[in-house]
Amino acid sequence: MYSIDTIKYLIHVHIEAEGVVEKTDVIGAVFGQTEGLLGEDMDLRDLQRSGRVGRIDVQISSKFGKTTGECYIASSLDRAETAILAAALETIDRVGPCIAVVQVQNIEDLRAIKRRQIVERAKELLLESFDEVGISTYDILAEVREASRVEKITAIGEERLPAGPNVLDSDAIIIVEGRADVLNLLKCGIKNTVAVEGTKVPKTVSELSFKKNTTVFLDGDRGGDLILRELLQVADIDFVAFSPRRRSVEDMSRKEIVKALRNKVPVDVLKAHLEKEESISDLVFEIEAGPAEEHPAPVVGSVEKGVPAAPEQPKTAESVSKIPAVPAVPAAVKPAERTPVKKEVPLPESEAAKLPETQKIPETAEPEPVSVKKQLSPASITDHIEAMKNTGRARVLAENSVIIGDYSLPELTGVIPKLNDDARGIIIDSSVNQKIIDQVFAKGLKFIAAGKFDGVIRRPTGLRMIPF
Image 1 (cartoon, rainbow, N blue to C red):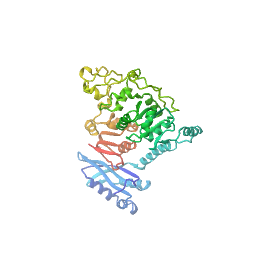
Image 2 (cartoon, rainbow, N blue to C red):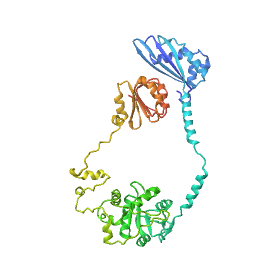
Image 3 (tube, rainbow, N blue to C red):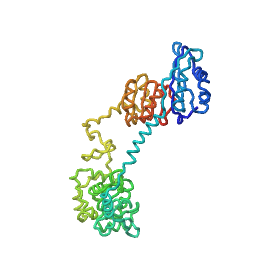
Image 4 (tube, rainbow, N blue to C red):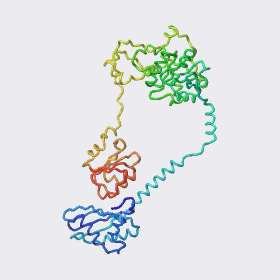
């Protein structure tokens, strides 16, 4: 036996015998007719025993009284010794009882594949590892100036709540969930924020809300809903804003924060919906999605000086009636009986399913076209293999079993070298030899499926070979 990591060359030998012979006859002829031919140092048995020559792999078939096939011998000798050993094999003139002709087709250098891999990897390392450049003076100045603009976070009250430096002096405050939210708003220049640090609202936050114009800015999840419900019970809230869906306040950019605060919703608009089981954040998003002229959002104000509130107006019944609110739905009315509000934004799929047939939006738009590749692609590699059986063709697949193309076997020689990084596997309805295996592995493919694998003595690591 031999290790594929130590062999250097692979001798390809073609055998033709005038009669029916078996593999054991070929192996016996190789050992018997080369014994003592090249001296003790080049005896084939001793070389194989010491691991300098690998085992002899024979692939033969018999038809019409004649036997033909291939023989492969792996060698870790140097080039001259390997050439001498290959030439000695051509002196074999009989296999078993039959006259035979043995001819060396070629001697393959198995290290060439490793060299190609080394070259490709070296190119990647050259491009990826040496692309860093020095920091320019402009970048250094910009970083220092940015650090000087971001003020440090402070702590207020007996609870030592994280807050911005202007939260006690400003006429308006913004209540957020945690310390990370306060830090993110400080980076954006908003200095009048305070964090509740949990679902229980601290006494300091409750007292500040009665003295200042208060905006609540929370994450659009269940945690944000719970904090808001408690704030509405123990604090005096004026406006409510939520982060975009599946986003947190601490992860938002400056542009997203300003946009969310400009689209804040007056708390009086939400009070009619508090008795329902719906998420408050969903109601806020629904109100924000309405036309701009229905809910003109007040400007947040100067970001550098915090986010002062719009001129405070007395909370009277008359002022509340002037605020355009979303029509309240009676609690006795079931969701299926609601009259849909006409909006430019389409209803969610779950709400559209609840509408009566007469109220559903007519399907006037053309259906979205489906990719041709996805329509034609079976669900798995097994389906592709079944589809390619008995076709005499080859198919190249990408990720998720998407078809890149079908090719005839003569075209395959020119197609494999041109495959790009999108290709992940290939299916060939024919026999595959070691040369094709090496080409496919060199292109980075993950699997190859074929009707038969002939003369393959080296299976590359990372390449899945699937016979069918």
